[in-house]
Image 1: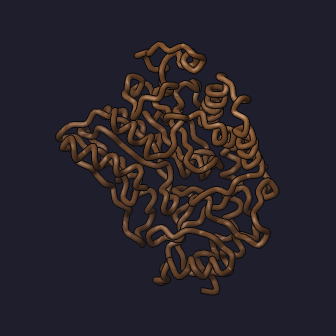
Image 2 (image 1 turned 180 degrees about the vertical axis):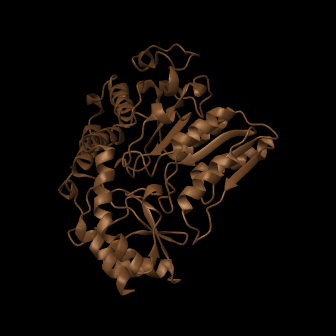
Image 3 (image 1 turned 45 degrees about the horizontal axis):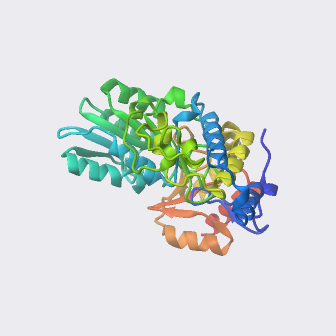
Amino acid sequence: MLGCQRHRFRLPPDLHYLNCAYMAPLAREVEEAGLRGMWRRRDPSTIFTSDFFAQADSLRERFARLIGGSDPRRVAIIPAVSYGIATAARNAPLGRGQNVVILGEQFPSNVYAWMRKADESGAELRTVERPAMGKPNRGAVWNEQLLEAIDADTAVVALPVVHWADGTRFDVAAVGRRAREVGALFVIDGTQSIGAMPFDVEEVAPDALVVAAYKTLFGPYQSGLAWFGERFDGGVPLEEPWAAREGSELFVAGRLDYVQAYRPAAARYDVGERANQIQLPMLNAALDMVLEWRPERIQDYCAKLLEPFEDAFREAGFDLEDGAWRGAHLFGLRSRRGIDAEATAAALRRARVFVSVRGAAIRVAPQVYNDRSDLEALATTLQRL
């Protein structure tokens, strides 16, 4: 069983930081990897041709291993979710009379690109809204409605694994099966789940999985990773960086031939200057930690933290999604008594409890650096309110 990992972070002892869904704190080893990269940049003569590829290839291997992928070449290095989703949207066939299925209140990075694509092609952007407050089994109902919304005219299904606002969990394996039945592309934003929950890319079989790395992957800001399946193998990238071309290692070594062919699989979708000598070592160090902890153990750790306090939250007048339809590492507290979420978050900050407000939900996101005292501080403050 995984124990508390707070010793690997530099969080103030009086801080109850339950906000990994906002931004993960930098672990000591991630911070140190970044500092070593900065020190190395003092003297560029120590940076060699192989450095433009070795850290990137290591990162592909680590991410593929984390998500159960057998081919690291399917991993692209990107700067943000919006970049990966825009890549998918650019290469998604979509025409008049077809539809793109998304969720209500879905994170904008996985909405705006589809808005544009649908508008340009004359397709429908079909939004499956959240069931009303007070409705029993809301998570199960939302999942059922999602599957019902996918029909023979669906060209793209674009979803998260858990909803960013309150952690509602979606059965992405079932959605993937339904998407394949109708021939739709399945695009997943895994930012709030990959690393904190088990995920098997071979089982779920998305056509694209896009992840920002500064949350549950514990990496630096403006870094991300994407898995692209076979349906994207012949796609057109957003830009034309030299390193995305076949034989690009020869170019950096001094050979000046221009090459039409892209590197195989997903490397064609890499962002330009992806061989960042500071960020890539940091993200490699972060993935080493997550691989050591293992997503299933992280999820179990968070579930055991939350379990003793569920009744306390309900007694304080807040509803939680049923355990089968939420992530233990990310959940929403919705007031039954009409308490203002912003005022509640402000009161929590005064008690040194840091969470987020997303819509009508107080979003709580514990992680491996939290312990019982953090949940106690949250529950005690809510009960006082």
